[in-house]
Image (cartoon, rainbow, N blue to C red; front, side, top):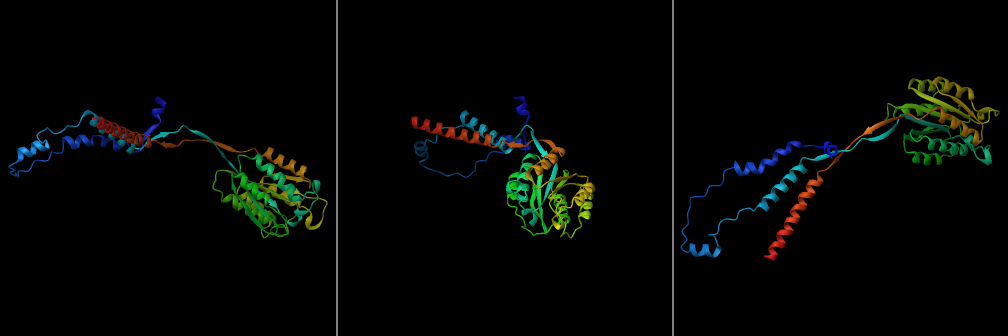
Length: 325
């Protein structure tokens, strides 16, 4: 009980001085003086007897006094705005922002994966698993092909992110590959995140080489390092292919090296890619901070409701007493 009372506070405790206002008005304000004008009424005795004016003025009973002071004190208590300080609630705050940078160029339509899956379908399936495992991270999404676009903001809303992953399609923003532009967009997205104290990480997945960037990939990697963004890279494709379809593992290794990240290689099948995501998940544990939050719960409604209840009960009892009389 003492702990409960110690958590109660008043926002406006100074209104307590209003408790003495009825006493001040009763004892300090002078009573109205009778006027000196007189009117002669010949039939005054008969009128006074008919109207029972000779009876003494009714005095307030103890019931009325008790009612007044009870309601008055409750109203002042409500006006003082009592609040209850709730016990601290432990909240886990994510301390890492992650941006997934996924290739959606035309080459991701190749169905050289398991069971006739396209490369993008394998990416979608394994990325969904990775997102579901990162419960305490804020994750955003950047997609790229001929251009690079932020496709989902950095947030804790994993359900919305999973929905955006399902909307990906090969060639949806072109056929080429703009690795450098995509990395630049990811750095900008991380810089504009509201959680400035969180660490920043990006995961870049592509199955080709840079063919359309206006921002050189090496320069983009240096920009990421300057903004404290660690970039992990995933080379997803057939290393034996040639031309523009060949994944540029040397470029991805260089990006990871410049930003302090790791470079992984995965074959075009889903299981190999899933193992890479598992390794990234294992080597980058979630960073969280435990925060104890308390808030004030207003209590003014209780004395206010009690005052109304007292008035209601008094009105009902007075009505019943008059009916019995």
